[in-house]
Image 1 (cartoon, rainbow, N blue to C red):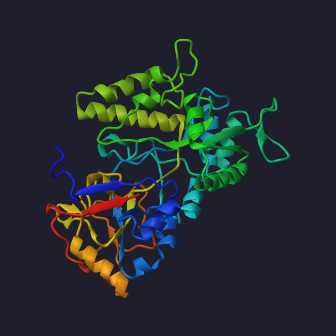
Image 2: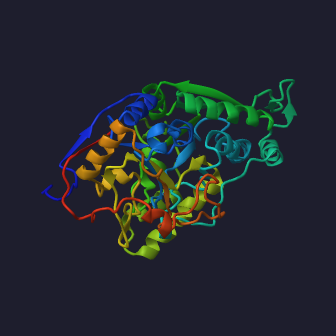
Image 3: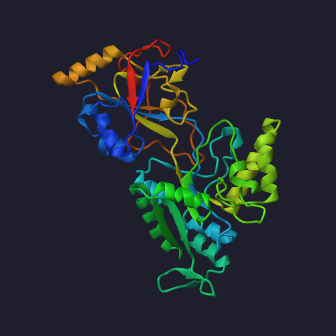
Length: 404
């Protein structure tokens, strides 16, 4: 059954709990490939001799995988999050663009909607609410938060402060992201309390529906979006009307119309039925502001030692397009001659041309068309032919490949 499914003879997976340590092992040649999508790995950490000397090659590959629904999931069973205007105000008070510009060098995009990027089953007209102090304060005022305290936080007439906690897995990257969001939110009169917890503790809290806002991203798979687990009432409340634990409906959202539509997505007999139900659900989620879209990335960046070869033919440019991680489709292979050549060059100090490519054959521009990152140039035939000739993708390969 597995014969001819993989190009390398053997795949070796090693668990390294620290990303920086994993990259050091890759740099030393202990791993053959490494994901380097995060800007800190693509920029500073890739400024190393193996890259300059052409031993390690870097590729930015634009895929067509649906956007991971990364953002804040609003628990509408908690006050004041049961108020739609509060939810709208919060979305205007979250400066995700500043996060993208500072933390991701402007390379990432703003996510616009839940289940974005499913081609026929995602509505491209939906645009995420932008950061706006005036829009946020206007929405909060409609919800009754009209008084401003000495600390700049809005309150209602009864003294209720506009203070809501965001639960997220504590790690340096997320800590910095939420510090930016908290400071920007204060200018809107919104107190965003940071609830950074160890990942398993945060997950348990969310599964118990004890969160107010939960930051996360759920695994998705093409070709059809899924709404049932996130919106259906059977996953929201129990027989007594209490929030139902151990389900993925972190919104605790339950409404008859979304029940019908989420069931229709599951049972639709035609593409048009499926499209109609999916688009309506996307609009409901946007209009009700239960999901605050964060950021997305429409590419992956891979670093690999030059003996790891990837396809480059009219049928497959580097990798099939509908894939989240190019490693998952196993179209790469080990060229043992190049491996011996490279290892000999490392011992003698010989170098090869530096190789940094952009493969944008399959790229689809976002709704608000963005230019490629300033650090990159679109791939051309000339730039790609500078590399060593590659063996056909279907050619049997030998050797083993290791990845963190």
